[in-house]
Image (cartoon, rainbow, N blue to C red; front, side, top):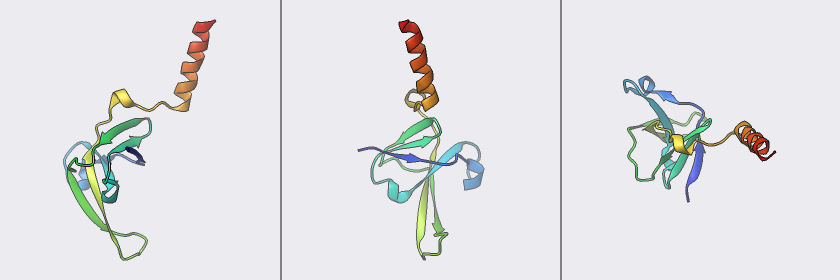
Amino acid sequence: MTRVYKIKAIIDGYHIGISGGDFVAVPKERLTEDLIVRYGEEEMEIKKDTRPITEKTFADKFGRDKLYTLCYFTWKPDKSKTSWSMDGRIKLLEAWKAIKK
């Protein structure tokens, strides 16, 4: 089963030590199965066996004495799989109703 992982931001390569490009960060523990990574209306698929461009390990920001690892992948949204917003669905429905009249 493929799960959806919603991200809050696209990361500029500069912030992870790579010149140029846009990247997404996914927690390593989420990569046990294929993922659909979604940002706004765009999405891309990451197979569980896809190797990340780089990984970074951080101390837990909530002070739980844990480390967590983020895996970074190049952001390549699949334009054919762009999710439809509710506004887009409403406009499509209105256009369909206008054709039916």
